Length: 404
Ligand SMILES: Nc1ncnc2c1ncn2[C@@H]1O[C@H](COP(=O)(O)OP(=O)(O)O)[C@@H](O)[C@H]1O
Ligand SMILES: [Mg+2]
Image 1 (cartoon, rainbow, N blue to C red):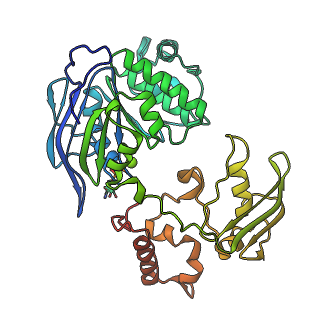
Image 2: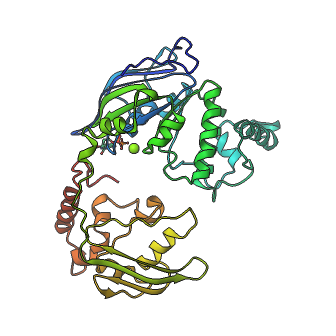
Image 3: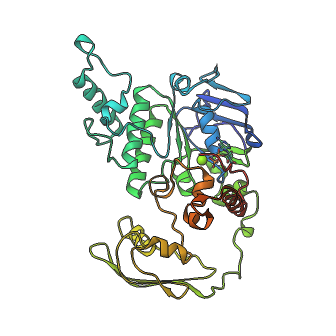
């Protein structure tokens, strides 16, 4: 694969906006990045691909000034850079759009966009009118309909990302890095984000785009870099890849090995749902899940898939029958559901799944605290053992159990 950029018009390659050369980064024993290089050219959307744990977010955080690389060089528009903080990255024109933006919920869209840089009027007061007009202009340029005076609280993730993009533009960012922005978006929201991405590119910005959806790479990106286990695998123009070659490079094996044939003979019925209903949400939902099979619950956004999952798990009320391993489970009892062996990984894991203040150790055991308790106190050893067993089980020995 070549690493030279050929523009769509076939013009001479321009100078890269950003160059990362041979960057390495370790966290204790974990080498998250090993000599990774990346060039970003003006006007391109560049896909950064790799399996979970490949080092994509670590690379993003180096560009963000969050992590300092142990080795390697970074330059922006030909100027060597040594980011010591996110502020340094911001001043160099690099903006990061995280999957879940970190805005101030009780401030307005306009206040968030111009945070710390609000136009001042007489007596040093914030000039609210000028602030609103400036932000309305940016949003209009982006082709986005968002009210500058609206509070950020209650905005969808998609809208919050757009607020972050508007903020990046107000800071004159020329390099936008998006870490899995589409993972939490609906189809329409994703299309809107792509329109914005195209408009950014047409103004000469470079976009580094992380996604797991290869169709998005082929539709929206011009170049690709693939990482595997913290190492650089390839860079090139999208036309040099096929979906198969991308996956093969990401996992380091042939695709044939990924899907094992003939092992999918389903066993006994583990979960049986009959006539499940909830007024106004869904009715008469019935299905079975057998041992050894994966059952997909398909439907458009809003069709009630998450609601069915919540009702089956006992979070929301429902009519109908839920049987786990042949036993009828009472409604509205997550405890009984979990005791019977069903687990739920919710859609919004940050809000609904994880207790962010707890260590991985405690969270991993949250559902079985009763079992681990010795009289009134927790058995710390048993807790540690249990968490370690699970982490081993997930074959991700790199997770540190005290990380929060
Ligand atoms: N702050 C950290 N402390 C310890 N290990 C980390 C930290 N950040 C990332 N890692 C580890 O570095 C590796 C790469 O992670 P990451 O960059 O998040 O990958 P990706 O974004 O491609 O899924 C993983 O093994 C991860 O567990
Ligand atoms: Mg990541």
